[in-house]
Image (tube, rainbow, N blue to C red; front, side):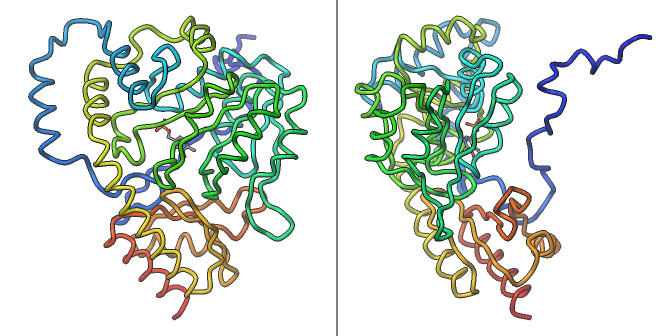
Length: 358
Ligand SMILES: Cc1ncc(COP(=O)(O)O)c(C=O)c1O
């Protein structure tokens, strides 16, 4: 009997569910943790002119190196320790692809970004979740438990601030972890600008530390698909062997470099998000929600008035789309809302009031 094409897919991939929130159309989209504000129009105009002047027929031979050099300069690092990719997720996949062999253990926090476990499992890794929630119901990284789980593991992979909880790892805890684990320690810093976190100074002391950063959040360029990985030059050299040539397009590099050159835009945007995060947190608490502390551009809240699925659907009917995370173990009552522009946040709060205080 002839085999179906899907029967040729790795046995570790077949049982997985595809990642990705359906992009339902909604007038108020607060489900993807995108930046509420766009790149300024004058910068877009300037970049459009530069794009037109480029020779599109040529491979971007040096563009990625230039971007990596700019990133290295901005962080005070050796350019040999910077890899650039089409979004930080691509670099996360590259690290896993190059390092993880079937049967290796990959330690993650639970709950955390679904992609970590998905990509690790696809390679046949054993995913070891370490609960983030302590006995008091709060979320916090348990350094001792992570260190214990890391014994014999290939990689500990954490997000700080963590998606979907917003939990941050302190500089001291990141340093202690990096010191105590003998495997690779990957920290996804996608949301770091919303809490002024910077673990790059730890890199020189901890050669097994790997940091992931993105242009998709505070740099307001999710459509660009750009990110970087900061790590030991020796590790980057190995990963370069399997990275696809010219992986970043010349337009992506051009735009990404222009964004790095304007750090004041990030600071301003992050400041607005942080102020709105405080306002949203207060308003949600007034509505009786259990609001978890967040260092990111989103808030995880729990409530017992309505089943989470039902409240999520009711908000959607009112034009507000947030992220339903309630299918994750331990998050049965939880929903995650991105911090948007003030008008979008007001629309979300009005919909919440209408649903919970009829
Ligand atoms: C934890 C985490 N890491 C990274 C990203 C962004 O990935 P990328 O840089 O590929 O856009 C996201 C986006 O939602 C995220 O939640």
